Amino acid sequence: MNIAAKLRARRVESRNRRAVNHAIATAATPAMRDEILIMAQRQATMIR
Image (cartoon, rainbow, N blue to C red):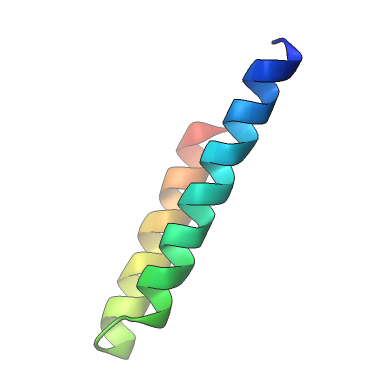
């Protein structure tokens, strides 16, 4: 991976993290917040 690809990947991770944080913050119910957290955790383990 060259430097540009690493920077791009870092930006994508950051964008996804912000999107998940926003979804958690604006979740309508605590149950929905928990579901979002679970999905984000599963996705993170699949990516790595």
